[in-house]
Image 1 (cartoon, rainbow, N blue to C red):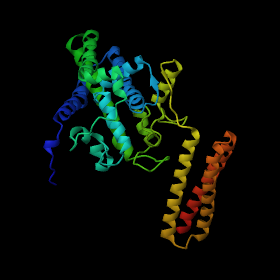
Image 2: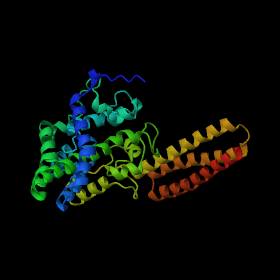
Image 3: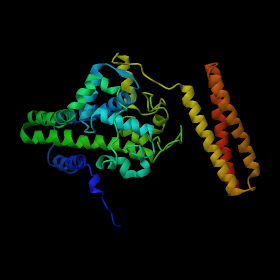
Length: 369
């Protein structure tokens, strides 16, 4: 295969930096750890930087600045701007501009990390190669009003290198002793941590548009992945996020693993954040019901086309249940404005009859076999 690289479109600054930082984090850091043991100060610092940097991206860059899911006082904004820079994922102005454009044009050419251009492009290719036309940053005018955001954008590179790489090296020098300690801080707390945080962010753009479930909507490629939620502080519930992007929660269910949501709730309790935006439960359940209905209808049409008249009895039963499902959806949406108890009763009936619908589809499958 003749692979032609468009060298005129290579972003040499991004490519060179990512190549070096990844090599140091993936190759040099493990070799160093094999030869030397880190003391408790360095391991504690590594854990702190992992959490602080990761949450600064998810809580700060993403939910606070990109989606305005809540309001935060200056200490929270400052913390997430400093440690968000330590992830080396650009300033928050550029990050938010790209992300807002991603939501507006998901799966289309204007989407910066459009998954339809391939997994590699969505994961990291969009960073390595320049777009044919530079996109204007006219969608972050609101963020430019924040003096802290403007300061971070102006001094982003200095903040990233000093706070993300140099300070860990200095702490290592004095706590572990000499150059070995400095290398521990630079390689482990610095480069290894940067690679881990960056890759987890990149996988949301790529993997969460390829693998997972779509319980809320199939209007775009975004999917829910509980596995990705484990390594991205709750960002893996991507299908919900794309359907309800301004909700401060990604893992909306009580059992969903979403440390970013819990952190926001804690900050709200102590008065550091306010005006939390959340989608009403009625809208969330209605979206689930509509999507379940759509999938049931699609499956029924597929089976009907493939099996002809062989399954008419089973299909009649499924059609009856599907009609009840539609009726329940309408009743649920109407009852929301009347009483919560009525909504709950309709929801219980919908869940019961959905299970019957699933069993009916199973019988249909057995009959056709």
